[in-house]
Length: 228
Image (cartoon, rainbow, N blue to C red; front, side, top):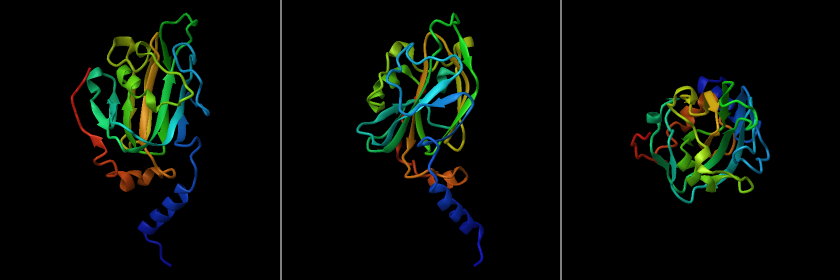
C-alpha cells in the first residue's frame, strides 16, 4: 500500500485525536500558569492570590449557549489598547467549552503592581471569542462554574492602554494559542473568559485550521463597533 501525503495526514489526525488533553480542553501551558481542577470555590478579590502564578480552569465542558453572549476579542492579533476591543456576539445555540483565567496579586504584599511572567495556553478547540471587559464578564457569569463565586464588576477584567498598568495578550493565528504577554495585577484583578468550539477530542494543531477553519462561519453574529 502506498501512503500519500493526504493519507499520512489523515492517519496522523486519527491517532492524535484519540489522545486526551492534559487537562481536558487545555492541551498545554507554558510559563507560570496553573490549571485548577476542580475549579476554586472563590475567585473574588483577595480570595485566590499569588504573586507569580496565574490560574486557569474549565467552567463548562459541553454547553449549549441559551442566549447570545457578548465577546470583545475574536480575531488573531495583539490586544493592548482599549480601541483593540470589538463588540460581537457568539450566537445562542452554539455548542462550546468555557474557561476562566484569573490573576490577583496578594493584598498584603505591599506592592501596587505585579507583572506576571509571560505565559501561554494551548486550547484543544478553536477560540470563538474572549471576554475581557468587566461588564461582559458580569453578563457571562452564568457560564461560570456553579460552585465558584465571581465578581464584582469594579475589580475584574483587563486594563488596556493605561500606562504602566497596561495589560497585553495575543491571540495567535491558529486561534488555539493564547499568549499572556504582559499581565499586570493591581488592586483590580486581571480576568478573562475564553469560549472555544466544543470538540469531541483534541484537534491536532497542524491540521486544525484546515479541518475547522470555516467551522465557525455563521457562529459569530458580527456587530463590529470599536469600543474603549
